[in-house]
Length: 260
Image (cartoon, rainbow, N blue to C red; front, side, top):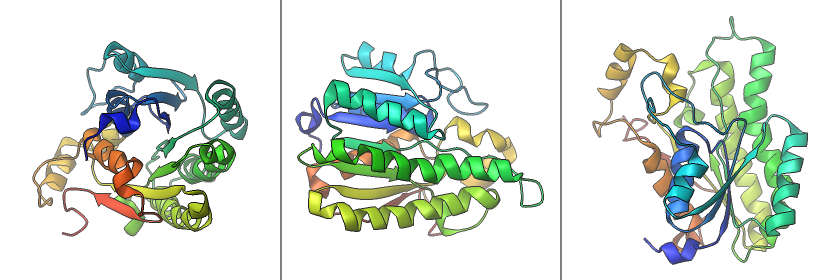
């Protein structure tokens, strides 16, 4: 499947691309020759307690330093006006989007007894609403591509409870939105698919403890934690010609955790 020329100069927009999974995906597409637009609320990568503890370059800097093309556009995905400005900027400069990766997401710990309605709304706004809003705003530009791709980042928690009353429902919503979008957009040769990561080594795991991480690892059939590159490789597949007859689907990438 490795074919860097397939992605050369493709316009690839990644939300939440400064850190974690988004950074990993952005670096992979940069390596493959795509022109990577990183949209995030801050340009600097988040530094985690357990993972990504020593990052010194931004995603865009890393791509450019390795000979690729990239730019950063500041965007709060919970703000519709920011998403409008993002798409407008891309339209003026590039006229199209070949690959849209809706990756931006947050997790705010707390049970239904603890989590405020404001926090619930914020999780839903970023994890679910922003995918609908940005995909809708970007449609004109994605239609300008000969083979548009939309890839939504969901979670294994879409299939189970846990991680609070907002996170899992937001990710379940991502899967159903993915299916509905796929049904509508197939006639434009646009595929829409989702990726469901398990535990990935990123700063979003800061709420864990060393003991809880160790305990979770012991449950995995494949005895290692996930890395951003695991999700990046899956995104590469969904963006490639190899997946041109796959839409409305999802891939679970979790080391077998959901199966066990």
